[in-house]
Length: 80
Image 1 (cartoon, rainbow, N blue to C red):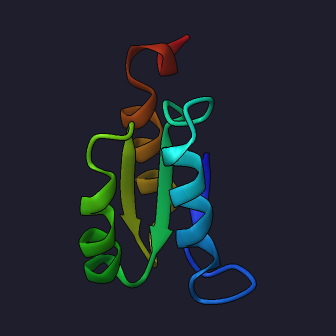
Image 2: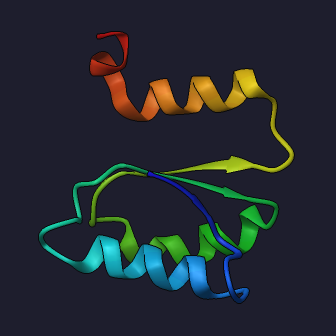
């Protein structure tokens, strides 16, 4: 999943990320968070360290950076 942290409100993306990572059904869903506020996200994300894969891509980013980040989060299955 590619998730922007600022949806309807500034905290909406963060709330969605917490719900995904704390739910046993969705906790293993890899999430790529795109944000311009990396420091704030990293502080908040520490609470979710043991709850599945979360990667961060700082805005603005290039198409190549997005593709590389998605390939990294998917691992070997990305080449399939």
